[in-house]
Image 1 (cartoon, rainbow over the protein chains, first blue to last red):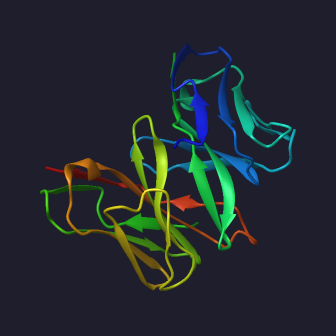
Image 2 (tube, rainbow over the protein chains, first blue to last red):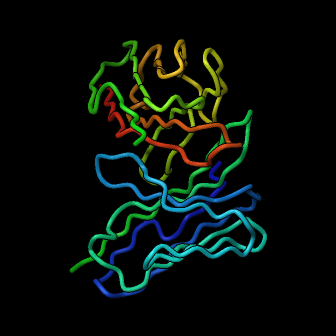
Length: 113
Length: 114
């Protein structure tokens, strides 16, 4: 059962355009994380959002956590070829003191020069 | 910097073989995780360990077992490899949730079972 639905799964746009990736769930999470993965490497954490309604910015990337802590979005402004990669959202649940991550399917983003 | 290393980047095995995937972290993290990553499915948790000799099943433990004899090392074992276990396997480590929320991932092992 996929608890986190991420959309779109593939996105190819031109340099300079804006885009939004969505992550939706029927479950409530203690927090939600966004990762980026380059080919041949493991995912790397970009941001964690914790509070319902929270907005965090990382240069041209804006992350938002839904008020009910069930959904999130990633918005990229003026996309650059260096933004190309696989973006993953992950809901966080705490089990036995460890963070258990529930991942979305991923969005493979390609920014064309 | 945290470093998580995995024993092989690429591995090819035959159906029925016993397969060991090794993961080592150098940051004294209590928690370690094994995921598999498949296109369109994201990462799915196989097993995790929150202490030496402790293990918990994740979402898809069937066909896998794990071993954690030392804090820095977490092994994933495929007792009898099958073709549907062909996948990318990722190991991760972290501090306990009360201290930090970041999982650090290794580069992955791409396993092909023929």
